[in-house]
Length: 434
Image (cartoon, rainbow, N blue to C red; front, top):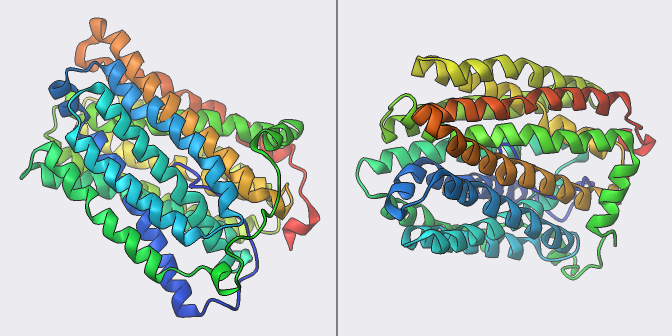
């Protein structure tokens, strides 16, 4: 996210219809798309206290804008787009989605009240939900399947660059421009990016005349959820996806406000330091998870669950220090460590899930996991942290965010237990080991 799946991942053999240079250009473009999607949403995170003051909002309403509205529509949009990504023109989908969310980002800068901002955030969520499934479906078709964990983790790392870079960029721009102008500055270039993707990205289906293929599978999301419910291991994966993102996104969505309120840091300084810590933690965590997962988990997918559990258990004490340290820079260091350790769970867990289902199910199952992360992380995590802060504010004032984030951090322990159980109960399909 980054701390979200990003959509449909369906491993296939590398296609000879895509020459190496085109494959590399496509990868570069889609990594850029993944980064830009998080830059646009992080601008809101950094300026949410300014938006709160100018629009006359409370933390509960702010939680709905940062969390529930975005997470719900992000999750709902993922399914139909993931199904189309299995048969349609993915390049067109990505291009349109980038354009839509870029226009929605500009609309955030124009919003004059809570409901106008809510509509802009919904548009942003719907656009961003579509690019991930199509991008990942395309990438794993044009790259070899034995690099599966690394491909997933590289895309997650690009999202992490957007998460951190969005904070740093918005913080720097805040020294020159009003928050509304910053939304315009980061939103408009996305329209050009959408056009470039359309012109330069590869789409092997078009080369083969298969842009209107029938779906790889006809499974509906409800059927995939039922299948997950019938597997003990995948049930535990579901528990993980409902607990870990709740804490992870609460830290991401409210971290900037935490440093501004609790440690009285200027907005530009928050963007620089928090962005840097997030970049270091998420990028290194994703890349390390990809390397270790490919090195030790390829022959034994259950290893991925131990990697995930270890990171989550170790992250919890540093999360507590982050919440209650009186020193802003100690808190920043702990934020770096928490993000690094938490990030070790996602790529390996997705790979463990893939090892237990047929290839034809992986795209729509990824959308199901994406839905769980979206609902639990951005939807519940961001909203819950906001309402907890509002509830605790009469007693603790600006310090209420300390206790709000500390409460949500306990879900890391639940996620660690779920990771262990997912590995112990996993039933690996023979063909997934090839």
